[in-house]
Structures are given as C-alpha cells and as structure tokens.
Image (cartoon, rainbow, N blue to C red; front, top):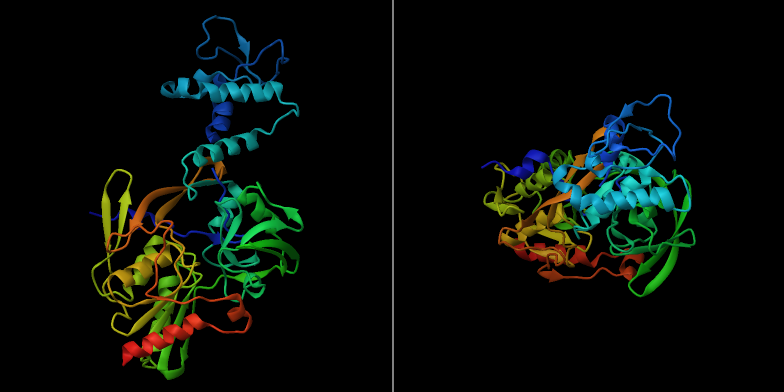
Length: 439
C-alpha cells in the first residue's frame, strides 16, 4: 500500500524558524464567502438600517412570512439557517447568537469581523487539545512556508509557540540567538521590558520581528533563573549541513534541518568526506528542529541499509510502515549520533531508527519528544492556512516518544559554563565512543 505521508510531503518539525515561520493557535472563513456570495445569509432590519441603493430585495431562508427584507452588507444580523449546513444548525446556533450579540451590544463598535473570524478558527482548533494543530493568518502562513530554506531577517532560532510562553527549541549555529547564548528550553517571558504572560505565541513572535541591525531585548526564563539579553537581529541564512574531518580521521557532519534540499546536500557531503577515507563518522543532530517527513526517511536511509525505519498511525486505526531506501552512502562506516533537547521530530525519526536498529549509539541528552505528523492546508481566498496533526509516528520498535523523547546510551550534559569556555563535552564523548567502536 502506498504510504500516505510521502504523498503529501508532510511536516514533522516541532518548531519553526524564529521570525520566519509562525504557527498561531487555532471557524469562520466561510462566513465572508457566504456573506457576499449568499445574500440570504444576512438579514437586515429596515428599522435599524437604511436601505442600501446597491442591494437587492430578498427572502431569507427560513423566513415564514412573505415580507421582503432589505439585504444590507453593513448590518450584522445573521440567519443561521442560511449560513450553516442544516445538520449543524442546532449545534452552531449559540455561535451565531453570540456573533449577533457582539455586533449589537459590544461597547466598541464597529467590531473587527476579520479578527473575530480568525479568533473563532483559533478557538476551534485549540479545542482539540493538540498544541501542534493551529491556524496561521495569511502573513504567518507565507512566512512559515519559507522556514526551511533561503534566508530572512531575525535572530535565528527554532521555537515552539504552543505553550504558555514562546520556548526556544534550538538556536541556529552562529546566529544572533546562538551568539547571545540562548539555549534549548529557554522561555521568552518578556520583550523590550514588557511582560509576555498571557500573550499568544504568534503575537510574541511578531514583537520579535524586525529588520537586520536593530535590537530586541528578550527577558529569558531558564529554569529558576530570569535574565535579559539584547540581541541584534541579522540576515539569517538558514543552514542545512556543515562538515569537517576531525583528528584521528573522524568525519563530522552537523545536520540542522530537514528541508527540500537536505538529502542532496547530505549525499554531496558524504561523497566529499569519503574521498578522504575517514575511520568513523559523527552525525550531529543537536538543535535540529525537524522538517519534512519524506526528507527524514531519505536521511535515515543514508545510514540504514534495510528494514523498517518508522511506523505511522492514523486516526482511523491504519498503520503504515516506512522502509529504508536502498543505496545509502554511509551504511557501513562506524557511527555515533549526537542529540540533545533541541533534537526534535524529523531528527528524532533519524535518531530513533538508528538507535532501535542498533546501527549506532546516541550521545548527549534526552531529545525533545515530538512523535506526531502535521500537514499544512492552504485556506481558500488567501485566508491563511491550518496546520493539522494527522498521524503519530513510532520508532521501529514501536516506541511512542511524544513528551518522552529518546534517551541516549551515553548521557552527557552541556552546561552554560562549557559553552562560555568553548568546550563541548558531548562531542568529546562521541569521539571517545567512536574510537572504542573502531578498535
């Protein structure tokens, strides 16, 4: 049976590039289409609204009398039977009643119908209780679709906006966020001196937006510590792959995301490294926020020669298996994989398969723990888009890692003191483990 996930090029990234892809939380886009294409959806009260010269006379659906009522786009009175499918009229009656009350009674008139519509979508999706299912307005949706490639102006970090505060998943290597010392799990609790408690994550991100060369002051909560940091926004080139040959002929590859071009760049990197005949390879997935599902399958297939690398479970009970794609370039070389709390989603698919199939050990700290698959759906009429969780994924041994993550065989912390002193004890341990396996 054909795998459903590969057909859609679904996203399994936990976060998005800060100030580029923005996921809002998140019913009502149909209202505007119905309002202007189905005049029966609006019932005006001639005593409240003067006749509009450009409108026609209509009989609203459900109207028992033959009295003609003027349709006026400026009047908010809604006939639920004309706006809602018959099978949902009773269910949505409170919604339309509330809509009418707001337009009649709210103190500040006129109300912003667009904001109400978007808020209704956000509320509906938040009712699912899934922090990875959300609504994006048109600007956010456009930015989110640019988040896995190219360049942008911002601070350069992968984030999760679905909690009480915007949380850093991982800073990009060499970015302003990285240079400022931001770390995975840091929470942005204030911006430019203003408390962000209770402010939706998408609005917090908008506050951090700004052109290169300008400053933003972030108040960061790191465990029990709260401090401020000033970051100068820059022009961020989204990284994918970096590599080098370390001492003792050990090849090192850092993979930063799972975008459209990641597999091609990884294969080119492996080819260039193997010309130098390395003795072993370290794959660094630390602070990799994920990306496309099909890219994750392609990447893990470079290191696994055969077998199931992931299972995908859908809400209807069906389970699909993904097997390694033949022809991987690094299926035999001794391997160690570096992970940490910023290793999320698509990168966890890679690490989980490598761990379950005993291809290589993991070194570092427990990964982020995102075991679900999302698809992005564009709404009609440039109304934005929704990100919907459509499936959950399991490791080859059937492990569900949501909220748990993957625990490495070798637990090694990376402290702030290590960072400030230019040390990397996790990489040091990976080199040690790899040398032992080579022997």
